[in-house]
Length: 140
Length: 287
Image: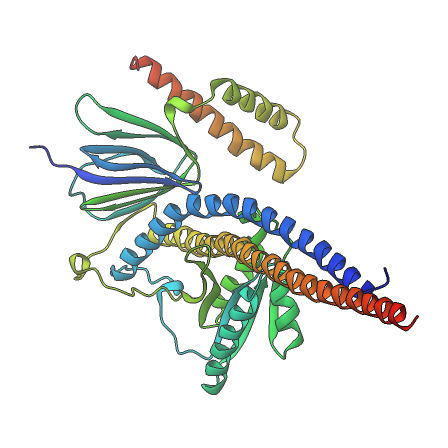
Protein backbone atom coordinates (compact mmCIF):
# COMPACT_ATOMS: atom_id res chain seq x y z
CA UNK A 1 0.00 0.00 0.00
CA UNK A 2 1.28 3.44 -0.83
CA UNK A 3 1.78 5.93 1.92
CA UNK A 4 -0.52 8.90 2.07
CA UNK A 5 -0.54 12.23 3.83
CA UNK A 6 -3.50 14.35 4.82
CA UNK A 7 -3.74 17.54 2.78
CA UNK A 8 -5.83 20.60 3.63
CA UNK A 9 -6.09 23.52 1.28
CA UNK A 10 -7.98 26.53 2.62
CA UNK A 11 -8.36 30.02 1.26
CA UNK A 12 -9.43 33.06 3.22
CA UNK A 13 -12.97 32.47 1.93
CA UNK A 14 -13.48 28.74 2.15
CA UNK A 15 -12.10 25.25 2.41
CA UNK A 16 -11.00 24.11 -1.05
CA UNK A 17 -9.66 20.61 -0.53
CA UNK A 18 -9.32 18.17 2.32
CA UNK A 19 -8.27 14.57 1.97
CA UNK A 20 -5.49 12.03 1.60
CA UNK A 21 -2.83 12.34 -1.09
CA UNK A 22 0.30 10.54 -2.24
CA UNK A 23 2.16 13.69 -3.07
CA UNK A 24 1.64 17.41 -3.32
CA UNK A 25 3.43 19.98 -5.48
CA UNK A 26 3.47 23.65 -4.58
CA UNK A 27 5.15 26.81 -5.89
CA UNK A 28 7.35 27.80 -2.94
CA UNK A 29 9.09 31.14 -3.05
CA UNK A 30 12.47 29.61 -3.81
CA UNK A 31 11.18 27.20 -6.43
CA UNK A 32 8.59 24.48 -6.77
CA UNK A 33 8.56 21.82 -4.07
CA UNK A 34 7.13 18.33 -4.03
CA UNK A 35 6.08 16.96 -0.65
CA UNK A 36 5.83 13.23 0.01
CA UNK A 37 4.33 11.64 3.11
CA UNK A 38 6.58 11.73 6.20
CA UNK A 39 8.37 14.82 5.01
CA UNK A 40 10.30 16.65 7.72
CA UNK A 41 8.52 19.67 9.27
CA UNK A 42 8.75 22.45 6.74
CA UNK A 43 7.28 25.91 6.45
CA UNK A 44 7.48 28.34 3.55
CA UNK A 45 5.76 31.13 1.75
CA UNK A 46 4.15 30.40 -1.60
CA UNK A 47 4.19 32.49 -4.72
CA UNK A 48 1.26 32.66 -7.15
CA UNK A 49 0.95 29.48 -9.18
CA UNK A 50 -0.39 25.99 -9.36
CA UNK A 51 -0.73 23.58 -6.45
CA UNK A 52 -1.14 19.99 -7.56
CA UNK A 53 -2.41 17.23 -5.33
CA UNK A 54 -1.66 13.69 -6.46
CA UNK A 55 -4.31 11.44 -5.00
CA UNK A 56 -3.31 8.37 -7.02
CA UNK A 57 -1.32 7.60 -10.16
CA UNK A 58 -4.21 8.60 -12.34
CA UNK A 59 -5.86 11.21 -10.23
CA UNK A 60 -4.49 14.74 -9.94
CA UNK A 61 -6.25 17.77 -8.54
CA UNK A 62 -4.88 21.08 -9.78
CA UNK A 63 -5.58 24.36 -7.96
CA UNK A 64 -4.57 27.89 -8.60
CA UNK A 65 -3.45 29.96 -5.62
CA UNK A 66 -2.45 33.60 -5.47
CA UNK A 67 0.17 33.12 -2.79
CA UNK A 68 0.08 32.01 0.81
CA UNK A 69 1.79 29.75 3.30
CA UNK A 70 2.64 26.04 3.20
CA UNK A 71 3.11 24.08 6.39
CA UNK A 72 4.30 20.48 6.39
CA UNK A 73 4.11 18.05 9.29
CA UNK A 74 5.03 14.39 8.75
CA UNK A 75 1.36 13.39 8.47
CA UNK A 76 -0.28 16.67 7.62
CA UNK A 77 0.19 19.25 4.89
CA UNK A 78 -1.64 22.56 5.12
CA UNK A 79 -1.83 25.15 2.38
CA UNK A 80 -3.08 28.53 3.57
CA UNK A 81 -3.88 30.38 0.38
CA UNK A 82 -4.75 34.05 0.16
CA UNK A 83 -7.04 33.11 -2.68
CA UNK A 84 -7.52 29.73 -4.28
CA UNK A 85 -9.73 28.13 -6.91
CA UNK A 86 -9.87 24.80 -8.66
CA UNK A 87 -7.88 25.18 -11.85
CA UNK A 88 -10.93 24.10 -13.86
CA UNK A 89 -12.84 27.11 -12.55
CA UNK A 90 -10.33 29.69 -13.75
CA UNK A 91 -12.12 32.13 -15.96
CA UNK A 92 -9.81 32.44 -18.93
CA UNK A 93 -11.49 35.50 -20.40
CA UNK A 94 -11.29 37.32 -17.08
CA UNK A 95 -7.63 36.37 -16.70
CA UNK A 96 -6.75 37.67 -20.17
CA UNK A 97 -8.63 40.86 -19.48
CA UNK A 98 -6.91 41.33 -16.12
CA UNK A 99 -3.57 40.78 -17.79
CA UNK A 100 -4.28 43.40 -20.45
CA UNK A 101 -5.47 45.88 -17.86
CA UNK A 102 -2.44 45.39 -15.64
CA UNK A 103 -0.12 45.79 -18.62
CA UNK A 104 -1.87 48.99 -19.57
CA UNK A 105 -1.42 50.45 -16.09
CA UNK A 106 2.23 49.36 -16.10
CA UNK A 107 2.78 50.99 -19.49
CA UNK A 108 1.71 54.45 -18.38
CA UNK A 109 3.14 54.38 -14.86
CA UNK A 110 1.19 56.63 -12.55
CA UNK A 111 1.70 56.26 -8.82
CA UNK A 112 4.01 53.90 -6.98
CA UNK A 113 1.15 52.10 -5.26
CA UNK A 114 -0.80 51.60 -8.47
CA UNK A 115 2.34 50.32 -10.07
CA UNK A 116 2.86 47.74 -7.36
CA UNK A 117 -0.74 46.51 -7.37
CA UNK A 118 -0.73 46.32 -11.15
CA UNK A 119 2.45 44.28 -10.99
CA UNK A 120 0.93 41.77 -8.57
CA UNK A 121 -2.21 41.55 -10.66
CA UNK A 122 -0.16 40.93 -13.76
CA UNK A 123 1.79 38.14 -12.11
CA UNK A 124 -1.45 36.54 -10.92
CA UNK A 125 -3.10 36.76 -14.31
CA UNK A 126 -0.05 35.27 -16.02
CA UNK A 127 0.12 32.44 -13.51
CA UNK A 128 -3.57 31.68 -13.97
CA UNK A 129 -3.12 31.46 -17.71
CA UNK A 130 -0.01 29.34 -17.33
CA UNK A 131 -1.90 26.96 -15.03
CA UNK A 132 -4.60 26.62 -17.66
CA UNK A 133 -2.01 26.04 -20.38
CA UNK A 134 -0.42 23.24 -18.41
CA UNK A 135 -3.81 21.70 -17.82
CA UNK A 136 -4.47 21.62 -21.56
CA UNK A 137 -1.10 20.15 -22.36
CA UNK A 138 -1.79 17.30 -20.01
CA UNK A 139 -5.02 16.85 -21.89
CA UNK A 140 -7.38 17.25 -18.96
CA UNK B 1 -68.08 58.20 21.32
CA UNK B 2 -65.66 59.96 23.64
CA UNK B 3 -65.00 56.94 25.82
CA UNK B 4 -61.42 55.80 26.07
CA UNK B 5 -59.97 58.19 23.55
CA UNK B 6 -56.57 58.05 25.25
CA UNK B 7 -56.60 54.26 25.27
CA UNK B 8 -57.35 54.13 21.59
CA UNK B 9 -54.52 56.50 20.67
CA UNK B 10 -52.21 54.51 22.91
CA UNK B 11 -53.15 51.29 21.14
CA UNK B 12 -52.57 52.93 17.77
CA UNK B 13 -49.13 54.16 18.80
CA UNK B 14 -48.14 50.73 20.14
CA UNK B 15 -49.32 49.18 16.90
CA UNK B 16 -47.01 51.52 14.99
CA UNK B 17 -44.08 50.59 17.20
CA UNK B 18 -44.90 46.95 16.68
CA UNK B 19 -44.78 47.43 12.92
CA UNK B 20 -41.30 48.89 13.22
CA UNK B 21 -39.98 46.16 15.51
CA UNK B 22 -41.45 43.48 13.28
CA UNK B 23 -39.79 45.01 10.22
CA UNK B 24 -36.47 45.19 12.08
CA UNK B 25 -36.85 41.59 13.12
CA UNK B 26 -37.27 40.47 9.54
CA UNK B 27 -34.38 42.59 8.29
CA UNK B 28 -32.15 41.19 11.04
CA UNK B 29 -33.21 37.64 10.19
CA UNK B 30 -32.19 37.96 6.58
CA UNK B 31 -28.96 39.77 7.48
CA UNK B 32 -28.18 37.12 10.03
CA UNK B 33 -28.30 34.43 7.39
CA UNK B 34 -25.77 36.30 5.28
CA UNK B 35 -23.42 37.19 8.13
CA UNK B 36 -23.59 33.62 9.40
CA UNK B 37 -22.56 32.29 5.99
CA UNK B 38 -19.69 34.73 5.94
CA UNK B 39 -18.62 33.65 9.40
CA UNK B 40 -18.68 29.97 8.46
CA UNK B 41 -16.79 30.64 5.24
CA UNK B 42 -13.81 32.19 7.00
CA UNK B 43 -13.73 29.67 9.83
CA UNK B 44 -11.59 26.98 8.15
CA UNK B 45 -8.80 29.44 7.41
CA UNK B 46 -8.54 30.81 10.93
CA UNK B 47 -8.82 27.31 12.36
CA UNK B 48 -5.98 26.03 10.19
CA UNK B 49 -3.73 28.98 10.88
CA UNK B 50 -4.37 28.60 14.60
CA UNK B 51 -3.37 24.95 14.27
CA UNK B 52 -0.12 25.86 12.52
CA UNK B 53 0.63 28.43 15.20
CA UNK B 54 0.00 25.76 17.81
CA UNK B 55 2.55 23.52 16.12
CA UNK B 56 4.95 26.39 15.89
CA UNK B 57 4.68 27.17 19.58
CA UNK B 58 5.92 23.65 20.27
CA UNK B 59 8.84 23.79 17.90
CA UNK B 60 12.28 24.88 19.02
CA UNK B 61 13.15 27.52 16.47
CA UNK B 62 16.68 28.90 16.32
CA UNK B 63 15.13 32.28 15.77
CA UNK B 64 12.91 33.36 18.66
CA UNK B 65 10.26 35.68 17.30
CA UNK B 66 9.13 38.28 19.84
CA UNK B 67 5.54 37.09 19.39
CA UNK B 68 6.53 33.72 20.85
CA UNK B 69 8.46 34.97 23.87
CA UNK B 70 6.77 35.38 27.24
CA UNK B 71 7.65 38.53 29.13
CA UNK B 72 6.78 39.83 32.56
CA UNK B 73 3.41 41.53 32.18
CA UNK B 74 3.34 45.21 33.06
CA UNK B 75 0.90 46.46 30.49
CA UNK B 76 -1.61 44.63 28.30
CA UNK B 77 -3.30 45.52 25.05
CA UNK B 78 -6.96 44.70 24.54
CA UNK B 79 -8.92 44.70 21.31
CA UNK B 80 -12.64 45.07 21.98
CA UNK B 81 -15.05 44.18 19.21
CA UNK B 82 -18.57 45.54 19.56
CA UNK B 83 -21.40 46.39 17.21
CA UNK B 84 -21.92 49.78 15.60
CA UNK B 85 -25.60 50.01 16.41
CA UNK B 86 -27.75 49.39 19.41
CA UNK B 87 -31.16 47.70 19.73
CA UNK B 88 -29.60 44.28 19.94
CA UNK B 89 -30.57 43.21 23.43
CA UNK B 90 -27.86 42.66 26.00
CA UNK B 91 -25.19 41.80 23.45
CA UNK B 92 -22.91 44.77 24.02
CA UNK B 93 -23.63 45.29 27.70
CA UNK B 94 -22.79 41.65 28.45
CA UNK B 95 -19.53 42.06 26.59
CA UNK B 96 -18.67 45.29 28.39
CA UNK B 97 -19.49 43.78 31.77
CA UNK B 98 -17.08 40.94 31.15
CA UNK B 99 -14.48 43.40 29.91
CA UNK B 100 -14.80 45.56 33.01
CA UNK B 101 -14.44 42.53 35.29
CA UNK B 102 -11.25 41.55 33.48
CA UNK B 103 -9.97 45.12 33.60
CA UNK B 104 -10.55 45.20 37.34
CA UNK B 105 -8.45 42.07 37.72
CA UNK B 106 -5.61 43.64 35.74
CA UNK B 107 -5.98 46.82 37.75
CA UNK B 108 -5.67 44.92 41.02
CA UNK B 109 -2.49 43.30 39.72
CA UNK B 110 -1.14 46.75 38.82
CA UNK B 111 -1.18 46.05 35.12
CA UNK B 112 -1.80 48.95 32.76
CA UNK B 113 -4.25 48.66 29.90
CA UNK B 114 -4.25 50.01 26.35
CA UNK B 115 -7.46 49.53 24.43
CA UNK B 116 -8.30 49.39 20.74
CA UNK B 117 -11.99 49.49 19.96
CA UNK B 118 -13.75 48.17 16.89
CA UNK B 119 -17.35 49.37 16.60
CA UNK B 120 -18.94 52.64 17.78
CA UNK B 121 -20.60 51.17 20.86
CA UNK B 122 -17.29 50.16 22.43
CA UNK B 123 -15.82 53.60 21.85
CA UNK B 124 -18.92 55.27 23.29
CA UNK B 125 -18.66 53.15 26.41
CA UNK B 126 -14.92 52.99 27.05
CA UNK B 127 -14.20 56.48 25.73
CA UNK B 128 -16.14 57.91 28.66
CA UNK B 129 -14.25 55.87 31.24
CA UNK B 130 -10.73 56.65 32.30
CA UNK B 131 -9.25 54.20 29.87
CA UNK B 132 -6.44 54.69 27.43
CA UNK B 133 -7.98 54.17 23.98
CA UNK B 134 -5.14 54.05 21.46
CA UNK B 135 -7.01 53.07 18.34
CA UNK B 136 -10.50 52.90 16.97
CA UNK B 137 -12.31 51.88 13.83
CA UNK B 138 -16.04 51.69 13.13
CA UNK B 139 -18.69 51.82 10.41
CA UNK B 140 -17.39 48.67 8.79
CA UNK B 141 -20.79 47.48 7.60
CA UNK B 142 -22.04 43.92 7.32
CA UNK B 143 -19.28 42.76 4.99
CA UNK B 144 -16.09 44.07 6.60
CA UNK B 145 -12.82 43.96 4.70
CA UNK B 146 -9.57 42.86 6.20
CA UNK B 147 -7.91 46.07 5.02
CA UNK B 148 -10.24 48.10 7.25
CA UNK B 149 -8.97 46.59 10.48
CA UNK B 150 -5.28 46.24 9.59
CA UNK B 151 -4.57 49.75 10.93
CA UNK B 152 -5.91 48.94 14.39
CA UNK B 153 -4.06 45.65 14.48
CA UNK B 154 -0.84 47.32 13.41
CA UNK B 155 -1.04 49.79 16.30
CA UNK B 156 -1.22 46.87 18.71
CA UNK B 157 1.47 44.77 17.03
CA UNK B 158 3.86 47.72 16.93
CA UNK B 159 3.20 48.44 20.58
CA UNK B 160 3.91 44.81 21.36
CA UNK B 161 7.13 44.77 19.41
CA UNK B 162 8.34 47.99 21.02
CA UNK B 163 7.59 46.55 24.42
CA UNK B 164 4.86 49.06 25.31
CA UNK B 165 2.50 46.17 25.91
CA UNK B 166 3.53 42.67 27.00
CA UNK B 167 0.36 40.78 26.15
CA UNK B 168 -2.38 41.20 23.61
CA UNK B 169 -5.93 40.05 24.26
CA UNK B 170 -9.09 40.17 22.23
CA UNK B 171 -12.65 40.17 23.53
CA UNK B 172 -15.64 39.61 21.30
CA UNK B 173 -18.89 37.70 21.13
CA UNK B 174 -18.81 34.07 20.17
CA UNK B 175 -21.69 32.78 18.09
CA UNK B 176 -22.97 29.66 19.84
CA UNK B 177 -26.37 29.61 18.16
CA UNK B 178 -29.09 32.06 17.27
CA UNK B 179 -30.33 32.30 20.85
CA UNK B 180 -26.96 32.33 22.60
CA UNK B 181 -24.00 34.60 22.14
CA UNK B 182 -21.17 34.33 24.60
CA UNK B 183 -18.59 37.05 25.29
CA UNK B 184 -15.16 35.43 25.12
CA UNK B 185 -11.71 36.66 25.98
CA UNK B 186 -8.73 35.21 24.13
CA UNK B 187 -5.02 35.75 24.48
CA UNK B 188 -3.46 36.47 21.09
CA UNK B 189 0.12 37.26 22.05
CA UNK B 190 2.44 35.86 23.12
CA UNK B 191 1.32 32.75 21.31
CA UNK B 192 0.72 30.01 23.82
CA UNK B 193 0.37 26.33 23.15
CA UNK B 194 -2.74 25.73 25.22
CA UNK B 195 -3.12 22.00 24.81
CA UNK B 196 0.10 20.28 23.90
CA UNK B 197 -0.02 17.71 21.17
CA UNK B 198 1.69 14.56 22.39
CA UNK B 199 2.99 13.67 18.93
CA UNK B 200 4.86 16.90 18.62
CA UNK B 201 6.67 17.19 21.92
CA UNK B 202 10.45 16.89 21.89
CA UNK B 203 13.19 18.73 20.09
CA UNK B 204 12.44 19.47 16.50
CA UNK B 205 12.19 22.47 14.28
CA UNK B 206 10.84 23.43 10.93
CA UNK B 207 12.91 23.82 7.80
CA UNK B 208 12.28 27.41 6.85
CA UNK B 209 12.29 28.83 3.34
CA UNK B 210 13.61 31.45 2.64
CA UNK B 211 14.55 32.00 6.31
CA UNK B 212 12.93 31.76 9.70
CA UNK B 213 12.54 35.47 10.36
CA UNK B 214 10.74 36.29 7.14
CA UNK B 215 8.41 33.33 7.26
CA UNK B 216 7.55 33.79 10.93
CA UNK B 217 6.98 37.53 10.57
CA UNK B 218 4.61 36.88 7.72
CA UNK B 219 2.85 33.97 9.38
CA UNK B 220 2.39 35.56 12.80
CA UNK B 221 1.00 38.86 11.57
CA UNK B 222 -1.31 36.86 9.28
CA UNK B 223 -2.39 34.87 12.30
CA UNK B 224 -3.32 37.90 14.38
CA UNK B 225 -5.12 39.48 11.45
CA UNK B 226 -7.11 36.39 10.73
CA UNK B 227 -8.15 35.90 14.35
CA UNK B 228 -9.26 39.52 14.72
CA UNK B 229 -11.08 39.36 11.40
CA UNK B 230 -12.80 36.14 12.42
CA UNK B 231 -13.82 37.82 15.69
CA UNK B 232 -15.26 40.73 13.77
CA UNK B 233 -17.24 38.58 11.36
CA UNK B 234 -18.50 36.44 14.22
CA UNK B 235 -19.50 39.50 16.21
CA UNK B 236 -21.48 40.71 13.20
CA UNK B 237 -23.42 37.46 13.07
CA UNK B 238 -24.00 37.75 16.83
CA UNK B 239 -25.29 41.28 16.44
CA UNK B 240 -27.88 40.30 13.85
CA UNK B 241 -28.97 37.24 15.80
CA UNK B 242 -29.27 39.23 19.03
CA UNK B 243 -31.19 41.97 17.26
CA UNK B 244 -33.55 39.45 15.71
CA UNK B 245 -34.30 37.88 19.09
CA UNK B 246 -34.64 41.27 20.81
CA UNK B 247 -36.98 42.56 18.14
CA UNK B 248 -39.04 39.39 18.23
CA UNK B 249 -39.60 39.72 21.96
CA UNK B 250 -40.34 43.41 21.51
CA UNK B 251 -43.01 42.58 18.93
CA UNK B 252 -44.45 39.92 21.23
CA UNK B 253 -44.51 42.33 24.15
CA UNK B 254 -46.22 44.94 22.04
CA UNK B 255 -48.84 42.34 21.11
CA UNK B 256 -49.47 41.53 24.78
CA UNK B 257 -49.69 45.21 25.63
CA UNK B 258 -52.22 45.79 22.87
CA UNK B 259 -54.32 42.87 24.10
CA UNK B 260 -54.36 44.24 27.65
CA UNK B 261 -55.21 47.74 26.53
CA UNK B 262 -57.93 46.42 24.26
CA UNK B 263 -59.45 44.62 27.23
CA UNK B 264 -59.39 47.78 29.36
CA UNK B 265 -60.84 49.76 26.50
CA UNK B 266 -63.68 47.27 25.96
CA UNK B 267 -64.50 47.24 29.65
CA UNK B 268 -64.56 51.04 29.79
CA UNK B 269 -66.82 51.17 26.75
CA UNK B 270 -69.12 48.53 28.21
CA UNK B 271 -69.28 50.43 31.49
CA UNK B 272 -70.13 53.65 29.66
CA UNK B 273 -72.94 51.95 27.71
CA UNK B 274 -74.35 50.32 30.83
CA UNK B 275 -74.28 53.64 32.59
CA UNK B 276 -76.06 55.37 29.73
CA UNK B 277 -78.78 52.75 29.58
CA UNK B 278 -79.35 52.82 33.31
CA UNK B 279 -79.58 56.61 33.11
CA UNK B 280 -82.18 56.38 30.36
CA UNK B 281 -84.13 53.72 32.23
CA UNK B 282 -83.97 55.75 35.42
CA UNK B 283 -85.12 58.84 33.50
CA UNK B 284 -88.01 56.92 31.89
CA UNK B 285 -89.04 55.51 35.28
CA UNK B 286 -89.11 59.01 36.72
CA UNK B 287 -91.47 60.29 34.04
